[in-house]
Amino acid sequence: KDLTSRYQTNRLEMKKKMKEKVELVREQEQKLTSKERETTELKRSIEELGKELSTAKQKMQGMERELNGAKQKMEQDDKKLQNNQQVIAWLNKQGSSSSGAVLAINTPAVGHTSSSSSLSRYLLSLP
Image (tube, rainbow, N blue to C red; front, side, top):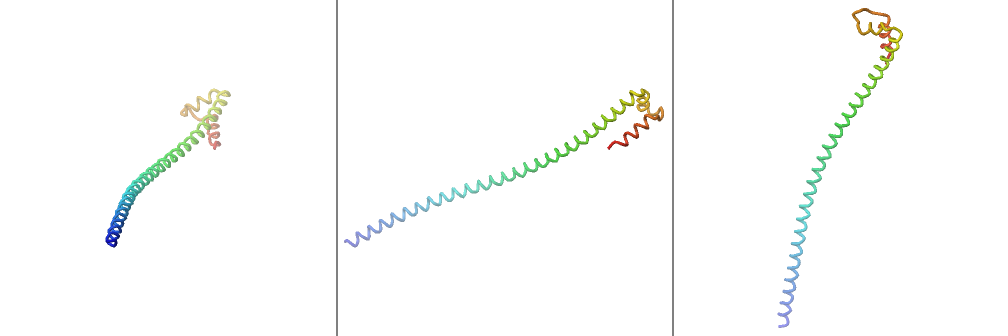
């Protein structure tokens, strides 16, 4: 009788331990499944963020090209402005010495005057 009761006790203990182990395995499987889902979601997020980053970089490069183009245009316009200011200053200087010079420049059909040829030489000397 002692042997039978020990056998049953051992059997019940083993059954209890097996149930605990099965429950532990189930919990670990649930945690693993949850972590796998989480990992998949994070990978998807990383992909989306990578695409957004790439798009943002492309936009930034386009804006940099546009900015550089605008800077070059501004420099060209600034040079034109400086050149025009020099021409205006020269014309004003010529106009104060002889009022006919401005008329000759504004009406090229009238003929060439020494003032218009002076203007041509001045314009050619500019950078």
